[in-house]
Length: 363
Image (cartoon, rainbow, N blue to C red; front, top):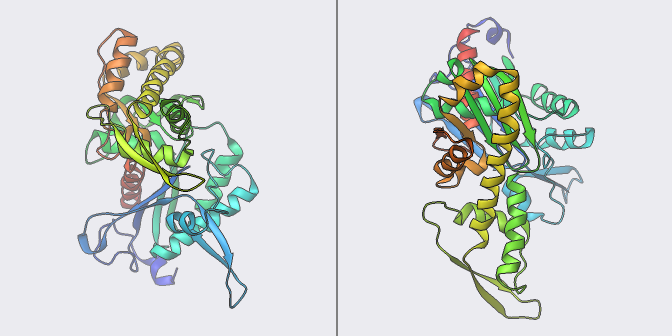
């Protein structure tokens, strides 16, 4: 930063000169196991800019110079499927090698999208008991070329709950339960005016496991004639899963010896989703909530009388909010209300950006 930028009063995001001297641009970041999302203000009062890409990269050698080049996201997955690397499959960069890959990925994203260094960055972190992985993630973000004014982290489920409660930061002043339905973990926490209480995580109920179940059920439903990989199963889930208006769908596969085989899927996707909801309700009702009640009885009582927020990629499935609400209410034998943001997959990043804007204004 220049001396002028150091001396200038930082202004709130949304100024017409996005990233100009003296302007602190609030940026929200979520480095996810499958997708990374970045949110920042649009230029000259336009809608916020959302950058969404696969969390993966591939490297190759420049044919002329011999230098290492980096491709990331969908381009890397499409052009180099044989060596593309998803470095956050467990949710965090667990070792030095994955941390370095994550750094290369993040810097490539920053450079290609011209993200401003003169920014206040808030990034969402998963509720995982992995100090080394969390420290690696912190190092990647804090040592990147953005966030020169400020870098802070907040729990992903808190950030994801913010858009569900409205257009501001009302969630910070609430007492509520948040359940994050992610690809690699099912997470739950209570929040008391922004304070995270009784964080719970299990890797037994995950979006990735749903993908594996769909692949297995497709094989069963087609009597062994069709085998799909988990990437195809994930695409089936994202394109067809619907608790309100699911419709059977048809796909075609190429036969190894030539020709093609057309098949219809009627049960596999929703059978896997039904198991997922039942397993998630079981974990929340019979593991997380008893632990919360044991440690924070008053918070437990207050939170169950208020909306429960679900976040994460699995929360994007149409009808899953009301289905989870119905089954959790039946398990607890009481009425509960479950809500979600309009775009649960973007919500943690949008919430993180709102926090960044408030911190920038208060700086």
